[in-house]
Image (cartoon, rainbow, N blue to C red; front, side):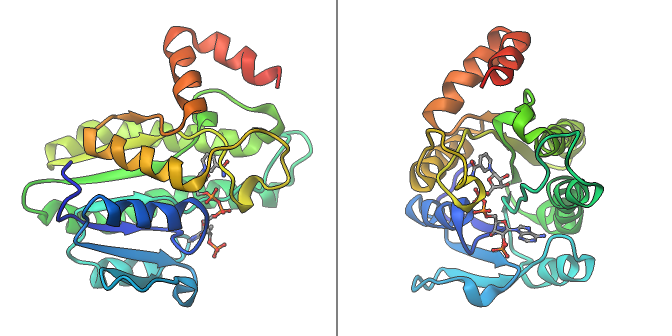
Length: 238
Ligand SMILES: NC(=O)c1ccc[n+]([C@@H]2O[C@H](COP(=O)([O-])OP(=O)(O)OC[C@H]3O[C@@H](n4cnc5c(N)ncnc54)[C@H](OP(=O)(O)O)[C@@H]3O)[C@@H](O)[C@H]2O)c1
């Protein structure tokens, strides 16, 4: 899609990757970006093109209100996400519920809430679900989170043919580890949020159905294309 002149909404835009995606979209010429956050007062910006917006993706009344306010959106970036469940045997039911409630049901609820808005967009619209390499193969140390991101990837695939008929494309962004609060305790190599966001926006501009926005994602994405089994074994060995 042409980012120039687009009107975007980014969820979880107050910190981490979401904040960097807002900046990358502005750099790429977006006309307006709704920076959605559970507490919109945490959105710090001086750019007049940024509109802070309250949105907890797990609260249906806030999703409905956001869709009424942001009625001109042409690019929806579902970035809000949670990493609460780790090892599948030891994570609690509540931890699973947070990850599935946010990464799967919250993402789907926002898509459904914004469908009428996106359908109205003259010239078509795009949805980008910020998923993870763990959507493609489980990273056992984060097995619960991986399962939620795999489910969100499956939902992305389910929606693609249906949305295409409505003039809406849906893309899956599949980053590797990023240097944000989410994985700050993990001593592994990470990409910067700024570089990852720029890679992600470049993928949106190209219309890649699978966006691999950072060097590790490119490497693991190539391995996944070659052999799903080898990617599974690689993640299991980390
Ligand atoms: N960091 C990584 O290594 C990595 C790798 C691959 C993919 N990702 C994905 O990238 C996305 C952004 O993650 P991040 O690394 O920037 O994580 P982060 O620093 O933990 O930020 C998470 C963001 O999501 C928001 N959020 C959580 N639950 C929400 C809800 N119910 N409604 C609205 N917003 C909610 C948070 O809001 P609050 O500030 O209110 O908590 C925060 O803005 C996520 O989807 C994540 O799964 C991250």
